[in-house]
Length: 144
Image (cartoon, rainbow, N blue to C red; front, top):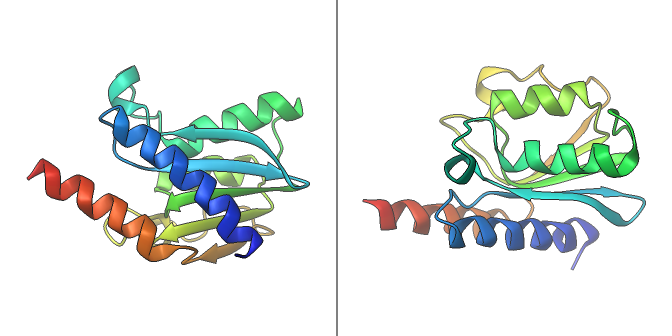
């Protein structure tokens, strides 16, 4: 298992926690120097807040832990490609790396705002893609 797969597994754990709460199963973790410094999962239903996405929760926790708003040396692992809002937050926080599992062709930032990230942010996609995608598909199949 690669390092990226190991941290994506932790993001998948967060996604499953979201699903257990009736939330869309998306999870995220922020890693700095080999240590998880922020984690989160969707809480939009629980908090009645459309901005309470997994990435936002993880970024906020990481900034608190790091004691500042910039996460230049950090990596964000998220199970699904971030939306435009989250891509903006990733850009503003100057995250060094974004690693995501499944693409989101309908609402992902790559379609609507591919320049939203900080120019130095490295993007890696498709890490544990099938597992991430299956979690989402199963959730929405259960809603139909």
